[in-house]
Length: 121
Image (cartoon, rainbow, N blue to C red; front, side):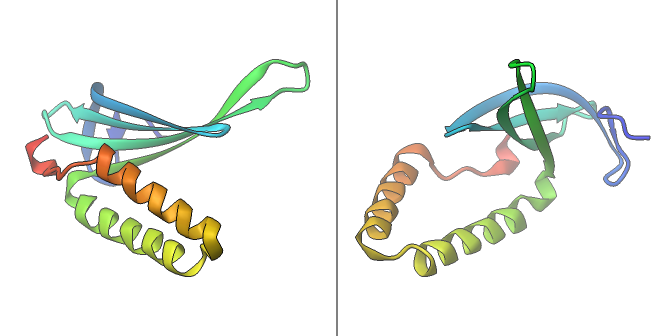
């Protein structure tokens, strides 16, 4: 039985209290980066992908997928993510469109991010 209030794998009780949130809209999907706190006043990150879909009766519904990321895993996760993003940028984006997209993304990254020490959260 799974409860969002307790993570059996990491043995941490989550209060789910939001500390900070950053939504990123990308087409039909929205990604939510949410910093939350445990009952022991420790921080963790949830990454949620939400995709809007239309039901048969015409109503909108949302498919959601969530990842829980704990501070002891931040560095390894960030390194792995950066490695695969760099691989895609260097090997899978070709031609002028790829180069322009890379340059545009680089500018967005420079504007939107700063050095963050997750231990300070």
